[in-house]
Image 1 (cartoon, rainbow, N blue to C red):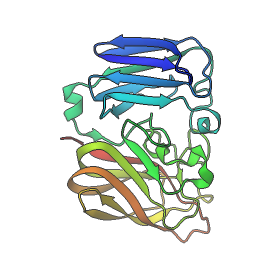
Image 2: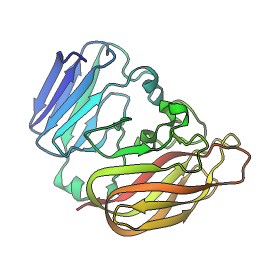
Image 3: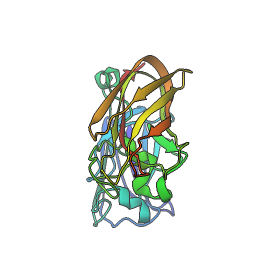
Image 4: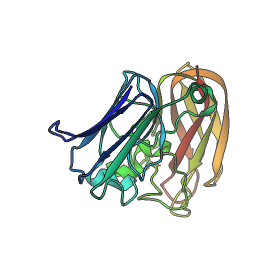
Length: 259
């Protein structure tokens, strides 16, 4: 059973939908700060869409629950300008099939990821986000969008490092998965942007892989070998000698399958 609850910050139930395999919820009300969506599920692997403007994507619920506070205020800058606006909103959630769970795919993609602590995965965090602004937050690199030739608000949201040389970004899958390859899409708003010429990815199994990067906004694929991991961390990234102090990451994809 999958249940979607749309709630106010005072725990008033606005709308609810439940179904064995695919729940479709709707609320006819303008969102207010603090409104949230709760998804309860007997299945841990779901495909969810939290707003008509957000791409559907996979989430993993280790405890069978997903708590999602509707972004408001400055947090909305990382989303489509009409996201969460208007007087009618929809949320959908369906159970993934066994074939989908077993398939090789991008295990990192989660357009519904939020800043801060979450009870659903994949989830991205970092030790720095430029000026603390949502359009430069770590969660942006797994939102499924790869528009790379500008910077700032949607659809060019990225992970910005505020010129920190010790910046790192951590991707937590929420469970152990099998990975074999990753792809990085650098922000390529040149000459505003610089870029990284190299870096390292540390894996939770104790291994690490060094990689080189080029000056491009296209995907750059990096073989990892076969690893069983819970998390991965990008670190020790070396900036190019471009005058700009602003390298940034648009998207981080990790390919593999569930165990």
